[in-house]
Image (cartoon, rainbow, N blue to C red; front, side, top):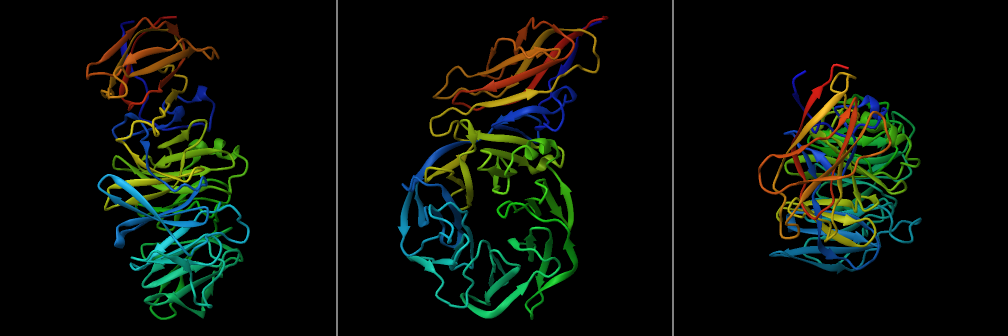
Length: 474
């Protein structure tokens, strides 16, 4: 038969919920890279040091205070203000706060923030702390009626809202005064007798996430908060830090450890491609989520500290696509909290262990000087027939990856055939210039699994890989 051309699948995300023999269009390994809307496979952005908080502890909270054009960070229970002049980031420690609850001795809980335009309020299981724009101090609310065990905060129509950690209650401040609270200003999520693990606001609605249920309330202008009739969802969350409101939809980890999205009160499981991975992680109640944006695309990141894994979902990929895995070295992704600093046009992430705050950017081709290893492994590809195939050539179209660090960048590839566990040797293909690169004489197979990787301090942008093959009669 005459030779034919066939594209190696690059446009689909990670799929590990079935045997690799059943997977052809999706990736069976997709680490430190993701698929773009255009169908290319691109290495994730790198990290450059913004500032070191010098705590040698995890960064538990990071928040962009838009009205004051600076960021706040929490590490080891201490609060820091982060400023930027030109290209230089600076820190100053605020005195007065100790953001640890009764069970925390090393500052290990996530800190949640909200603000009213003047005051930033923050909590991680204990008393609400606050910071006033322009001050050099922060500290607990002085009002004795304020709740004292709070894990999550939100702002809606002039009031701060707070959950009662370990209860089904939520509380609100006086309207127009975030520092003033009334002992009678509270309500209980009544549809199910479970605790409120997380509260958040989207589309001017208050969403209460419980262990077994989700309730949606609104401000009726008098009560002030009442449940929306019929807006009760019989599905809970397993991790209180998993919900994120992204581009008009809620994304969260449910009580069965599925990643779901909620739009217009409808729940859809989006983690089917990695369901097997999630079920095998063990303890996943420690999931920590973030929303990051990369080259105009929004991602839901969820890290599991106990399992030491981080998964990323490009939400434009829909319910069956868009998943990949991010890592730093052999463990989960270094960044565990995130803040989009709009005035600076910067994305900051707080380190999972060191107290460092990083700039996450596609301009960074490595992680603070350490190369990022990006890998894409296909399923077993048979091109629709189990006849023997002769691989005449492999054509590569890539973006020029040369830079000051790497003058001879390459994408390496290897393959294995017909269910074998033995891989071929690695072959390097240049990623310099814009010309199409060709590799010839790549043997025969009935089904073949390909792996492509780059471990240099440079980008990897696989635009297209095409195979020229001859299908044999027998």
